[in-house]
Structures are given as C-alpha cells and as structure tokens.
Image (cartoon, rainbow, N blue to C red; front, side, top):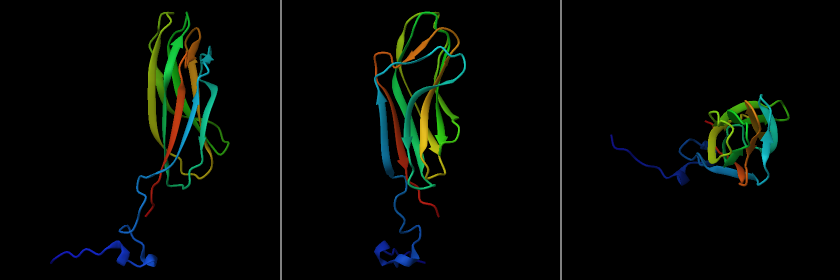
Length: 162
C-alpha cells in the first residue's frame, strides 16, 4: 500500500488532530529577575532569602524551566553551605524544588566561585508561581552574590495536551 501525504491545510479546522497541532516545546514567556545585592544568612536551617522571581503559566500543561546563575563568597568561620530554590503556587507554602549549592566545609576562608543550576518544573496551574532562594550554613555566615550578579530565569515551555 502506498502512503499519501495530506497537507495540514487540507484538514478541516473542526477535525484538529496531532497532524495540525503546533506549539510543541515552544517558549511561551521568559521572566528574568536579577540582583547585585548581597544575600546572606547565618541560619543553620534553610531560610528564605527574600530574592524571588514569579511567573504565571498560560496553561496547566506548561512546564517552567527554572535556572539560576551567579557567584558567591563566605566570610571567616563559614562551614558547609546549602542553597536551594523553593517554589510556591497561588500563595500556598513554599516547597523545595532543587539544590544548586552543596559545598564542603571551607575551613573559615574567604573564597568565591560561580554556580548555576536548573530544573524543569511541572506546575499544573495557571496561577502565579513564585520561586525563592533559600540558604543555610553549618557555621558562620554565607554571602551569596558577593560582588557579582545573581539571576533567576524562568521560561514557560508550552505543551499541547492530546
């Protein structure tokens, strides 16, 4: 049997199928939030930093690619450092999305390095989703974004539901 191709323009609009679908994996919107301010904590449990970025997905089938990049430094006495991105939907409580810094003890020295992390978040909502940096240190004080720029980028990835 020979195969016949039918141009999608020849398919009636009320007979939409996967053959006429568009938008797979396209970027719906991009939100960028940056700061050059230092963010610090002496907390030994994960604590909100106050640095957030927000996006409102256009469809419940969308996903949000969350990425963060910047630099960091510690002061004398700082121990192990953890930094996470937490998410919150529609004003509910924050929940841990991913860790982007997981450092060994720095033995109290001042140092700096760049870092980055990303995660594809399934939101299942068209309500606003907030993403916030949470930090903790085992001792001393951590400074995230020490003399650098911290950027959170949110990209809505559109999906088409069958």
